[in-house]
Every structure is written in structure tokens, then in C-alpha cells.
Image (cartoon, rainbow, N blue to C red):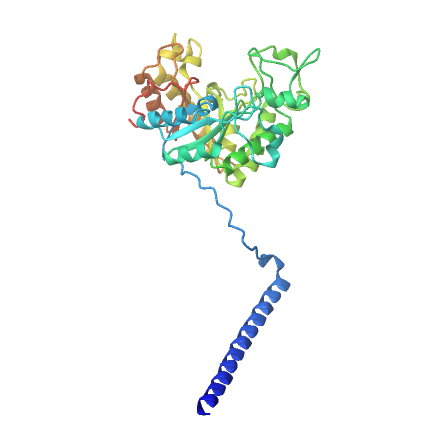
Length: 395
């Protein structure tokens, strides 16, 4: 009897406790709902919908910019073999390189990788040179390199072939081709600008640390008098203005979104404050990019430059003089408050035989010239990716 009463009392107490707990939970839930409702009423944007079983998006991690960029150029063809590519990384790292400039277009202009963004799906290449771009990017970073995506802009036979209304034509019909048989885009065609920006955005989202544009100019090396432009009208706008507008567009679309950008220009743009008949003006480039890379290859300067019969034999003098002339433009622009964010000079230097056999000492001379001129680093060009003659780049 006593045992039964105790059990009944215990059961009643248990039920009472459970009831109290449930009531508290209900009150708390109602209070929370009221708070959420009130916040939503005040500002619907502050309340995000709950997503069940959805993993958080991974944020792309970018490698920090080295205090001095010591870069080497690598083609998409070399990168098509992952083993060869990583072997080359090891070789140039042992020489002190800390930056890779990688082509992301094939020689014919087609993308060298499979794009993932909807904006580039139509431009997916038939032949993919870089089979696993994400693996390659990870490998570069794992080896301690800053990674720059480099590609030509207006020299693009692949995009010109798919989009003939944006391409240069020749009198009499058909696409215009330069002396190397390559088709070009009209630099004033804004659809080509957007395509360029879309490539840059995808590459940065996939881990590249910077995007570099080459062939940002009007076409040369061919019968330019026979060019018919689909949109450019020389009676309404000069070449400098067109290229300047392209620079400003990339500045707004990319640098404005936090994407570091750089541009390659002819070496002589630092010497002559004109557009050289191709639209490139050094001051305009400095005003819209993070880094400007003048191609100051000594072999590309004509006989008589600085009174040298063969400028290729005088790498230090040619490079330092070119960059000091560019530095004068930087100084002048720095005094103008309308140019608050100027690029730094980071030249392309010669690591190939032309005009002279380029020994390690001659490469070192160019590196010293870049440093003496106050550059933020240097990039070594060898189209064959043969860097067997590299000196110690840190000295």
C-alpha cells in the first residue's frame, strides 16, 4: 500500500516536472519567434533564411605578394604535363624564383583550361591543355609561388574566328591577319573587353593571385593599311583614347573588385610619351593597373640606342635607362592628386639568346638594373621555358 502511494506520488511529480519543462521550452520558442518577426518587420535583409545541410562555401585563399617579385614565364604547353611543370617549378625555385607567370591561353588564342563560369561556357576549348587547373594552382601555391595568369587580349585568332563581327577585316573581305597569320580583335569592341574581364574573374576565383594582360594594343606586323575596323572610327577617336578606355574598364571591373591586375607594354613606351602608333601610353597604364611590365629586352632596341652599336650587348645600361625614364613618369604623376593609386614598375627582362648569347651574368646585370631603378621586381621571359642558364635570382 505504502509502496503504491509512493509510486503514484512520484509519477505525479515527474509529470509535473515534464509539464513545466515543456512550458518553458514553448515560451522560449515563442519569444524567439517574436524577436525574429520583429527584426524582419524592421529590416527583412537582416534575417537570412536557414539552409539545412548546406556546407559553407569555401573561400579562395590567395598567396601573398612577395616583397620582390622574381618571376619566370611558363607556357600552357609546358603546363600541360603536370610532371614536367612541377619539375620546372623545382628548378626555378632552386634559383630563387618566387613567382610563376602562366599562360592561360593556347598559342592560337583558345582557353587552355576548362572554364566553370557560365559566362565562359561558350568559349570552352576543344583541346584542353591544362587538364586540372585547380590541381595545378594548388601545386604552385604549395611550392611557395605567387601565381600570375597571363594572356593576350586583342591578338586572339580563336575568339576572332568565333566572333567575326568583333574582328579586324581586310579590304575585299575576310579576316585580316598579321605577318604571322594571326587574326586580331578590334580594340574598341566592348564585347571583347567583357570577355577579357570574365576570364580574369574566373581565374582569380580559382586561385590565381593576379591577372596580367598582354597585346593590349592595336595590331602591327602586317599590312595595317588594309585593316577594316568593325567599330573603331579614327575620325571620332584616336588609338590612345581607345586603349585608355580599355584600361579604365579593367580598372573598374577588376581592380575595383579587389583583383590585382598588371599589363605588358612595349619597352619604348617609357622613352617616348606618345602612343607609338599602337595606342599604348605609359602614363595611362600606370594610372589604371597595379603593376606595369615594360618589355625592356635589350635585343629589341635598335642600333644606336644610347649610342650602342648592338644594344643587346649592354643589358644593364638599356634596362636601367628605360626604367629610369619610366620612373620619371611615375614621379610626375605622383605629384598629381588625381592619380592616387599608381602602378609600380615591374619589367620583363631578357632570358633568351637574341643579339647576343645571354649568359647568367647578363641576366644578373638586368636584375641589378631593375633594382637600381626602384622596380618592385622583375619577370624573366624565355618562350621555350629554357631556364638552364639562370643565375641566383636573389643576389
